[in-house]
Image (tube, rainbow, N blue to C red; front, side, top):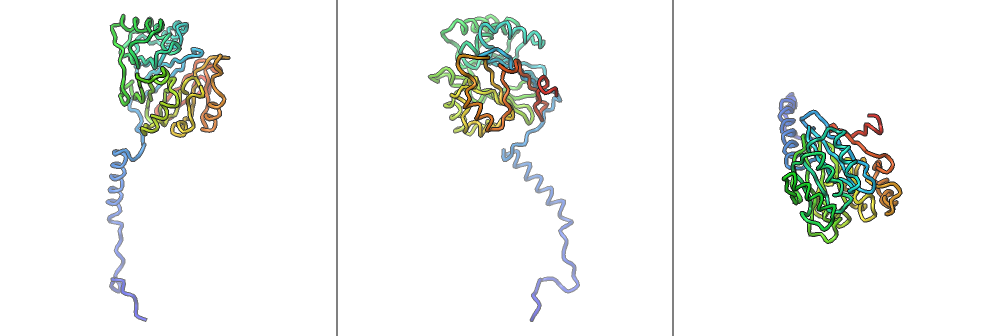
Length: 302
């Protein structure tokens, strides 16, 4: 039988690809870099400031308040009820905060706007975000008056707007001033720091979650501030499947009359594998990110 012609002369060694391997490797690296640049991957660069992001969920009972600090800059998200003004004032004083670069009043209900007047007594303010500039309640009018006294304007943000907080980035994911339900006017925002992120859902309910999901919004987060104090009106399974948080913080009052957090929501969070942290059980909750991991120094001693 005739030998098969391989195109190789007798005694000739096969050509090696070794001289070209470095060139192939460089091409592959360049293509992967282009892939990430064009959004094909979710690789997150670590913050260059070498610092940390600190998020303190303040125990204001059946209400919401969180102080976010990074790189010497401060953001206050909500302030609890009117009765919580002194609590918020004390927390700011204890943490050495005399100027709030940003204040976010997520929506006009008293359990979110009420204590912000106390914050504005303790600190000067930079930018103030709110989904509305007028609302028929004494708590909101007091807040509006304190903002005016500081010669600030209330800004209604749009979805997609971003601003820097030290080495962190804050993105407004939702804000609908025209929503019929005040809860669904809520400013939803995501704070990203390196490979970690915190998603603040305020009192946004499932219609807002659905809109975010349908828009293809990136909802992944290391920490989820659970919507509407753990009410069954929020935190749907479909929503949680996108967020997949390592931690779920519920700001809620002990033995509250609403039955928050709802057992259905707690079950959903457990199914998602989230570690549940509740202000009614733990008081103030501090989470710290170094850009790679999130720790709970006061709870875990890390």
